[in-house]
Length: 453
Image (cartoon, rainbow, N blue to C red):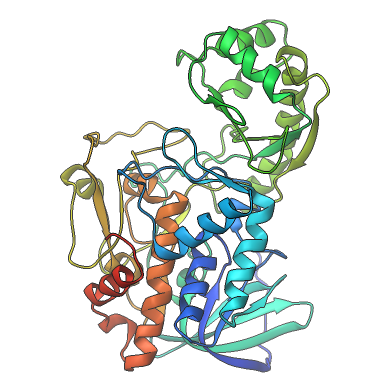
């Protein structure tokens, strides 16, 4: 490989903050709100022009239920859901999941909450590198329309999803399955508008679906050889060469609160892509995903009652990544913690969401969780090795590949984000290092805010 030496330049320091949160997605927006709520001067860096990450840019909705009675959520998560529900852009289904939301309105709610606490946002801004001195992160370098700039911070929280800040800082990271190195399958989501949901509901009943039909909250799914009623319809499309086998490898759709006649599709899954940090493969995935979406849409419009006058409303601007890099932290959550229903003194989140690996088969013994069983995530999973002044939240916290498949859902990411924001404030208020935080103290604070942990 040819090498080009990129000479370092003198970069202006444009500001200094108590806390810098990199990535305004599911975990990052929550971390920033939590930090600002504690009264800290907080900057949120986001590459898009809105917050929400997977929930908005990737159109990942609804949020999954944590499978614990009452669906417990962290305090900021509860407030987000409450605001969406009160405005008509959130909903609770018959199974107790109040995580149904409108992804467009989520952008407004997250931004409003952060700004209410005096937070500062830099949109259209890319993280370039970490500023590290003597194993401590002191700030970051960013690039936007103003050019390359340095921003200094007492604490930095990495919520990039890919552990970009941690990796740039020298934190050891895992990538993919420990045996194969492969990542979970990725998806490109899309929305279809002007669906006659009443007719579609009747159609699903007629073909034998007896779940997910509580209008206006409609849900359906299909995976080959899994017994879904829609499979017979997909087989017709396959026989008539109007879809390919890959189009039915994973198909799932949900209606959206506050968007009458619209459904969000958790598909297609992009075949044969199992490297989530390869730029060329990700670029190909967008192209392949749009090809599959067009084919799927034509099939749906022809074969599913209620889709006759529909149209493609939008394709997600961000590919749906389920898993990529994960940091090596003070504690590595593993399948043993899942199987043993582990509890921790420094727990900052809990879940009973199952092991959920897309595009691969797990070669590990998994003991399914029963009713009222759950496991916890310790704060130590947010504290990386080797670098001080840095916290990590979201799907890239310290865990093994298979454990991550259970904790990657949005409610858990929000809980880790809130814990990280609170912990950053705790460090600054009491003048202690991130590496010296007692996670049990963070747990106590989360409890005072109303999280049942």
